[in-house]
Image (cartoon, rainbow, N blue to C red):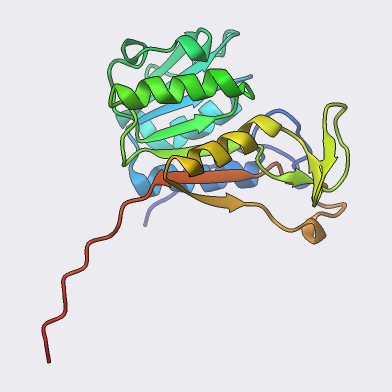
Length: 212
């Protein structure tokens, strides 16, 4: 029986955190990494390393996590490569010319993140198998932070990743957004930041049925 060590997820039940991923979201990403058996992950935006700790726990020692941020992020293991750099300037050499299994957007810089995506795609570091995950794509039921603004259905917490989802969809990516309805937000869970998971659409081959 597989035992999953999740002791690094330490938030309160309400998960009332503005910056890092919420623990329910971290648990989903942990499962995603395990299911895909990811070996190379790039996260854009590292903050204090909360999401990095989760990715590393999911991968184990067999994978490499690259974290890029304008500010230093704690290095959490020998297989954790911290890159202090504008993500718009990231080159394949920065990620050791790896092909990425997962690319995690959480920097809230539209042009820079899109430029990184286009460059790594042109270089083959992002291919049709790479899964993209974007944080903060949900709406909030109320105005919890000064920069949020109201739109149809709720309050936009971070517009950048929502715009990126729309742009990537136009480039042929399927999107699955983990956005609970506003009615599910309550005192015990005041908001859900939201995740969107994307991958380039590829038709699944099916063996033709033999004629009757």
